Image 1 (cartoon, rainbow, N blue to C red):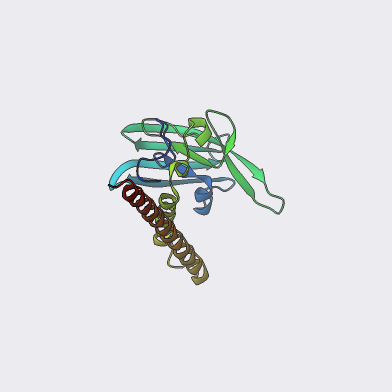
Image 2 (cartoon, rainbow, N blue to C red):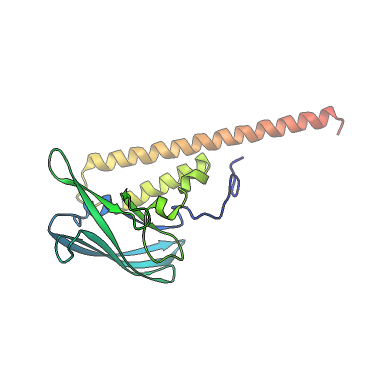
Length: 206
């Protein structure tokens, strides 16, 4: 019925279990620019406990001969000290798009993950982790989307324009409505199953 623990299970980690670094976020922070070196600290928590304290340094043609991303610190009780090389792709109308080169596959990716117990970041395919949404029922996916939208709202700058805030609020309301509809469908299914079971019991003279 899509409840907790239902569905296919395996011992593979999921993206929800991992720490993630998205290149799009680094670009929004202004850390991915030509002839630029930037550093920022990241503290990650799960279930109210700190799981990682990381320093992320991006070096684009400054001290290092090739653009790269260096991550140091501690995560899941392990010492982290890894380097991931970057590659840029010029865009037709100016600017560039950045990719990380997965240390395992050598292929381009835009997001890096660190599973629990490991000491370096690689792509999702490189670590062979599953996407968390693949194991979730629609209600759980909806709740996770609501949580992410709420976190984005909290992270908005006070200078964020009103239309942007309104679009995010509309998405939040839309996802809440979706979750409510899925819960109603689930309850309706439960009532039908109960009614059918009651009819069978009455028919058998129970």
